[in-house]
View 1 (cartoon, helix red, strand yellow):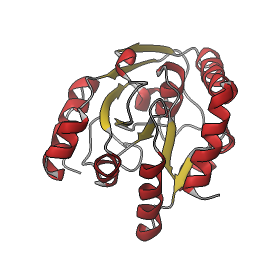
View 2: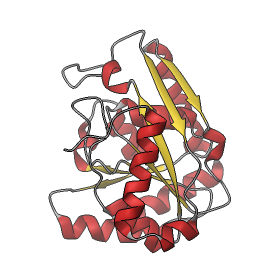
View 3: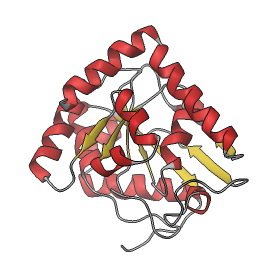
View 4: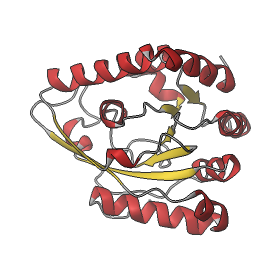
Length: 223
């Protein structure tokens, strides 16, 4: 299924509200079963009346589940192809019409992102992890440019999200999350569409990365 087709399917499902409700319920059940203490703040900052791209740091598969459970407007995820193979999560995302990008094929990845930009609608945010893969240590690694090219192309605002604790809750060495852990998710003030458009790409990336590091209370890493 192409990127545009996947987002189209998700849009149709959202019109009935059924898929969004199922995704949220699924995430909430998982969080309860893992005895996770998920603490979210600022989630009302995600706009439902504007085109927006949610940009978040990425520590573990829990980040997707945390966003499903807390963001009031269920996002479509643009995720790396490897996530499709994640236990439970990959299948749920595939059924939900989320978009997987093959990072090893740059031209195809960029084409998918351009199509995603054209398909964005108010009330249907697109969520992207610009670090490109899960962190191996606490901190915010350099961001890839694709999410920011997409936001500029789509005329979208950018919603920064900082997540802390998900790496400790679900280390790469574990097949499932560890119980009784705390994860913090903080949504920042959106970077307006006018700022996204006006700022040079590198300045926009630096601003978003600094805001996410502040929200997550994590250091900026060199690599």
